[in-house]
Image (cartoon, rainbow, N blue to C red):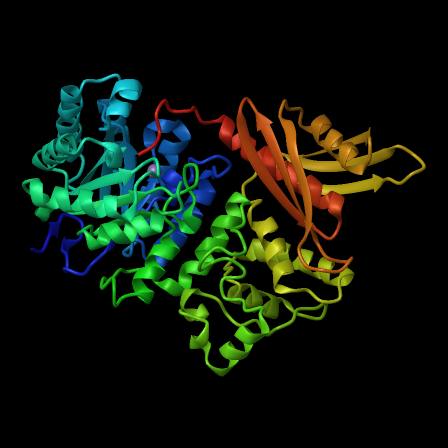
Length: 527
Ligand code: MN
């Protein structure tokens, strides 16, 4: 039976709705906070990727979360190609009203309300009796429908919920007007056969379940998030919740790019369609990595540096004779392009811009000028500039958008004869400030100078240096992890000078900490 949905109309039987929660489940995980401008940039890229629903945030979580969901609804949410803009809410009146207000301006909008239904969560987290939870399901969905016809309801910890109680809750949500029913594997506990059993049960036992969109939301604690997603589709689910690069709470969510490419590559076994423009995948993946400062692991499926690299001679030989020998997907189909143009000190601005485009970067004129200046500076110091160098440099430039503290310059005196001295200039809220500091080595002196200009109580808990490419003239890529009141952030920096890269990484981390300070920790975020 075909489903008629308030935002999507009559759904074709083979249609899968792709629900992206990079900006909510992904963004709330440790170290992945983004500021308003970064969220809007991600929202635009996700729109161009073709996601159907974008969970833009959790409006009750903090004023910042509310403002960013509202800003996305008012910007991206006005485009002709805008996805449905969704705000998350617990079941209380205040949560739902806040979510409804935040998404109000969007052309198509959704409220996603959730409550825990498992015995463990009801008893210890909610301290509510099952009958109270059931009432909350009805009340929350009914209230959400006052704001929009497109309402999603989630049974948090659904895969560990008593089957009979789960069916009663789903029935109550549908009766109250929910148009999407999500049964998340909140803790990443389920196996593929559990997913098949649960969704088949809901579809066959709950009245009205065949008229709503069933949705799956899987966590990767056992590395099964994508496998569970595919199992859920086989059992009748028509909405897939996922994130770019698989980011999210703990081990993360099902990765959007993996789920989408599994459906596409194995369409013989999973015969469904979606609206994702797969050649945009790599670009969005890299944008997210640049904004958050977390690279994906090299062997990550689809978007990892090695995902299409063939090292073994016998494999290389096979791929050259026929790509299909060892490649199940075309690299170009997810945005990988053959690199040909080598950049050097004589390359001009147009070639630089073209090269960035092939690497997946579309940056504005101001940023381009800054990045080009840094490229020229790097090309003076380094004979050949590799793709990886450009990625490191542009990421470094782009992630510094809208930061309160900016690196300006650093002069150092180090070595074995005298204590290290650093002369540092930073721009803080638009004002240039300088400090001279000494320290136990150049890194210590530099970090002391940052402390002198911008006093703070954060502790340095990790400092690591890597080379972007090989050779002694390679750029350094540094990571700095700061901790303040239990909150942890990672900053990254790249430069041909290791100490400059370190200063940039420290400043980046400090900026992220400032974003994080603004938000209050909501009592129970999950779903
Ligand atoms: Mn989740």
